[in-house]
Length: 159
Image (cartoon, rainbow, N blue to C red; front, side, top):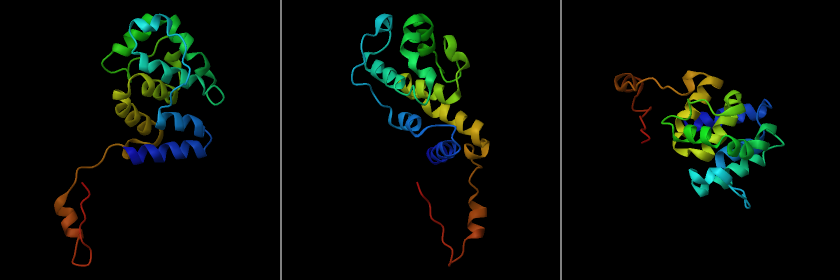
């Protein structure tokens, strides 16, 4: 999945669908130096996540909708808490205007708030952008692999 994700992101950047800054935010998971007040989110959100949300707002040049993410979350705090607490937030619609957000925006938000679910979301993202063949592998066939080998063509296993 790692290589497929890198390939997918590189293709999307070259096609102009994503900016390099947005991709860097997904890969690096940046944090804002001065996050400010969490407001009603402090009732349920771990304090360490707020700087990550505020860092996403800095992507307003390449993703204009991100500029109001923190305000939107504070306004719909209870709805965001339900989304945050859901078992599979990557398939649960986000609150407010974010329900209709782009798939990459959802990935960024998921990376900031629920990094434990990013792998499943990345698999779905890569599959939707490039096809299932980049995510789902055929089962390994040892006998076919052995038939292709010879003394001049050895078999290497990478574990």
